[in-house]
Length: 183
Image 1 (spheres, one colour):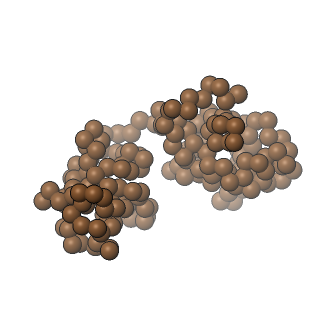
Image 2 (cartoon, rainbow, N blue to C red):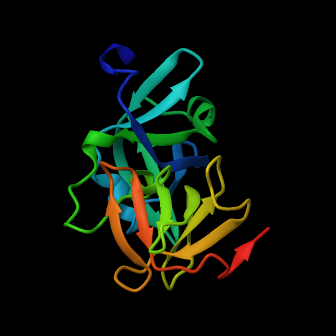
């Protein structure tokens, strides 16, 4: 079953399987897609097992309050489905929808070097935070950074973020070196 999964292809984690629900193998599925129901658009989800990657197919889904409940093909009993609890679910990066020009997935921004308009190197994006108002780049210092401070920089296009160059691996920001830096 897992033979058609190429372990060398990049995968993007888009959710986590929660506890079982009921007696027919249903599980709660925490979706990290936006909106949450977009996770149902993927024909298969990938999980890592001790025997390597495994492909799961959602054959039924429903909302119960704010919880997304799913049933995976061939997981018809809670004892069997319980083995999936806690597994992160991913898709191959090539399956993600194309974005419009100027839009980026978080995984594309992680690892990019952040330089301000004065040419000062702040470090690299380690991860992003969702704040509701806008996403925030968490920039960690590295060898060659101007100092050893972590910076939280709002990802606001044309006000703070001037340029994202995925090929060059850089983000250019209008951000002062001493503004909201944490030691």
